[in-house]
Amino acid sequence: MRVPRVKLGRLPRKWFPGGVWVRILVVRPYIVIGPAFAELSAREQDGELARAVVHADLLRDGAPKLVAVGSPISLLIGGLFGMLLVAAEAPMLAGLLVLAVVGVIVAAAAQLMWERRIVFRSDRKVAEVLGLPVMNTALSLSRRVRYKRRGLIGIFFSLCVPNEARRTDALSDLATESDPRHDDQSWFAEPYVGGW
Image 1 (spheres, rainbow, N blue to C red):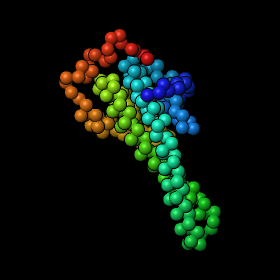
Image 2: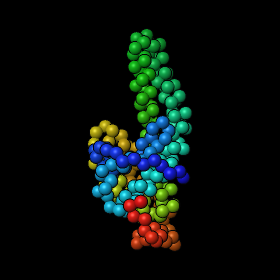
Image 3: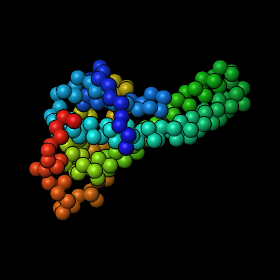
Image 4: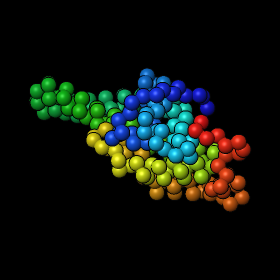
């Protein structure tokens, strides 16, 4: 796992009530920490940072594949719809408009499905490496902030994150009583790494 870039930034609370965003720019993800992050407890901060680091690493590996596969598919589907309009003797401008709209819808749907898969993978990685208590704290924070997101962008971000019950079910096979990391009293081995 590579060390991600981390930046302090201003994140709108209506979209990022937890104060953390893994942003991707030209296939290079980085973590943006906003002011709302300071309002979280130390355990919530640890859980969010752990998830963000893993999420950034998975995005770095998967973004080229999404672009390589998603772009041609969205252009193909949008192009087919556009050609159908042209074949139906609709104006060329209408065909181009349909190409653009359908392409954007298909690209957004592909990104949404891809992001949901990344969330499941990052949850599993955090739970395997740091234990279920860290992940359970991150899930309870996610549950608490889910309905605080506002606007179309906030709704899209909420759709990118599967609901917490499904995420918990996906991790149920990791819960074992013999693993000391699953004791809610012992988060990390001594010394405690609070606040990262």
